[in-house]
Image (cartoon, rainbow, N blue to C red):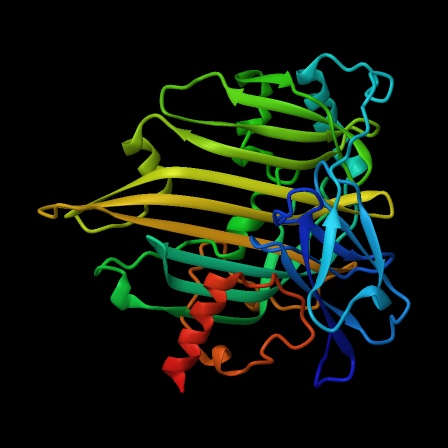
Length: 394
């Protein structure tokens, strides 16, 4: 536990592991009960959650797919990182609990038909944290981070969501890019558009569900809720096609989580989907594309909460014997939210969906750059990259 120099919040640190195997649990949700403060664990199971000092009696709940929830009072956190063990859920899910659903396609259709009933039905301003990394091999070559304001419209609205940047920093080591500058377009929008319930057209084109095959897998649980696992894949497999798993609440037909990937059959056509501009002497092909999205719940309504993407590319240069591999990762988490009828920001304050995050290293000089904003705890490789950036600036 760390007391901030600012007197209005404290930082509580922990790491989440499987109780039996002691393996770290990645992307577990960490939230304050009855309050809108949350984050997720990083790839090493670690987290830091900043909470207003006045919430001295708060309880933190940790949850993850297939595990029993665990709740801890703040007094149970120690001065260092608190070890938190989650136990895999062993409860047998009966057919009665799962309402004897046997038609996977009907379940998915019902899920989309209840979008207005199950999901956020008013405008909201969400505070989020966005991180974007580019690696060449195993070495970080670019790091972007931002605290953003997501101006979220109701799920039944035709209006597009908008994003403004509250605070950001970015550094790129161009010397490691092999004369090729990789840039990810969209920034935080590329994470927000993974919201399948708000933007189904990016996964299920025009919601034409008959173009996909759906099948029921073994049931599971999330946040102590019975959940259907629906596997899906596109029927047309000539070019690039999606497959994945939808996690749908058995009681309410709400999509709680989705994991999916783009299967690449034709590298040239797949490259056209992702590569907008490149030198004529280089060929860039996507090798692996994976996406995840999770929804959070408040007062019976669900909303976009966390998403991540992993894109791996192979770069071939003419007259070069060896190729280069680049991995692009981005992730965004909603850390706070407030209901609002209308945004007070001007149109010029919003970033464009085509944004490329600009280099700005000034924020790396300040050890308290994020202040009271909750972020995703950087894993060791990212923390090492941040330390190297600081060394160069000193």
